[in-house]
Length: 128
Image (cartoon, rainbow, N blue to C red):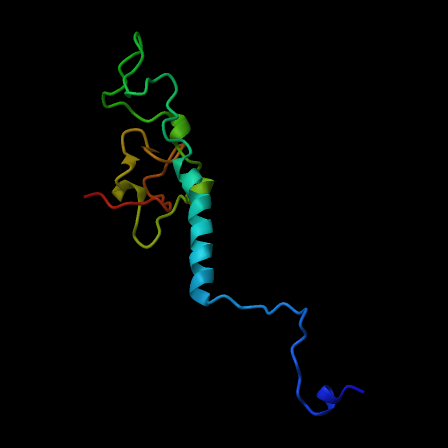
């Protein structure tokens, strides 16, 4: 038998790789770098995606002037389900007290469809 093992003196095997565990700080920095590296393209996606505009931001010749105060297109509105719209108030918050509510047409600047003045959604913001 091997006398080294019997005596309790273990010698490291010459062919074994010694694994070193990296410090927690190094692992966290690496994770942060990878996360930021993945988020940066997502954050920049859509920048300069305006179709038909030149690099200077000027509209092409013959295009109508849209820089005046115009309402956002209906496609920019979100669905009632996605903002948890309900026809009843919640905690005293009602659509008629919301910054985004348009009283004349019972509609909202941000949510599509007819909106009840007594309704509520997650986008509710108090009028100033």
